Image 1 (spheres, rainbow, N blue to C red):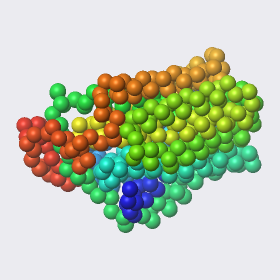
Image 2 (image 1 turned 90 degrees about the vertical axis):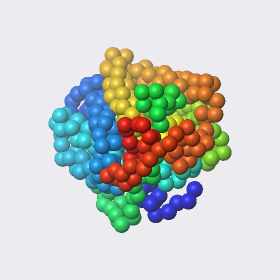
Image 3 (image 1 turned 180 degrees about the horizontal axis):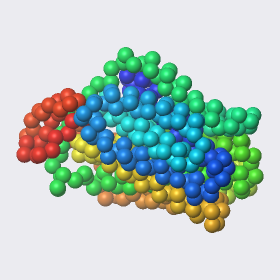
Image 4 (image 1 turned 90 degrees about the horizontal axis):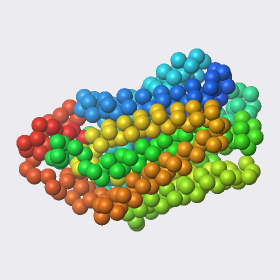
Length: 420
């Protein structure tokens, strides 16, 4: 792992989205109070994030080909800052939902762009670097619930805490002169009918479930603490930082584990840790024990996304950006359906019972990873033989083609060309 100025710039850009996401999620219960809506209606902000994520994923391959990775990532940074300003100035439900959706479009540009560049730039160390990048994002995001909760506690409301996103975007712009390179040539592997491999779809299922876990916890943990443990609103909002604190520690260590052990096995173990932490939180007799459980849960959650993304790219059959665009659909499904289902269920049975949905989602992800390990020996490795440079060893004759983002490679006889 060699961290150069490009690596640190990408870490900073990803951290902007981390601060927004971890700051906005605990704001949703406060918006519910402000807008006088039900939990089900408030959870539509999660649906708005999903819609934006899917829209970003749909247009990602075209945007990369048309404008290049550098423009994509910087536009995402500016877009998140602009949408944050819009949220700060808005009060009606329709307006906050719109800004949330647009922010998610911009966020998907940051996440997918930085993931592709870091994976390409660091080769075999890609999963470890992604884990570290998300550790940095979690470290910055850790401050968001504290800032929002602190502002609420002193009577300023949630807006000053979330508004720090704009300042972070301005600071990151200092790195404008660092060049974000175009992708290296990759091969489009001829699968049956051009489909992604089966191992990829197992990772897709895992990412769908774990994405829902993280957002459900971020959106509704504060509400559970307020209603079940009788924690004051400001403290309950700030308590979300215990999850992010666990994620920070886990991501700092998770990258090293991914260099020593097959990432899929590390991911399966992390899901077990998340399950233990969630059970501790749910059965906790006191707020202190509940928060300790959340920290353990965050420790396990820490590597769900970075290792899942790294494994999805590694098992994409040499089609990284196509794989990442499909991941956007996974997050669209998880962000849109699960938080709404949890919110609607909470209106009927209460948030403490409804949040048991998180335990079921952890089980779905663990089943997908276990299936990957049992049915596809060797698929737990981060990068397969011959894939370290983005070229699958099964690819036959190929030729170089030019694209808007630089040269690419296509399989002779294939009508599709990928420009990474």
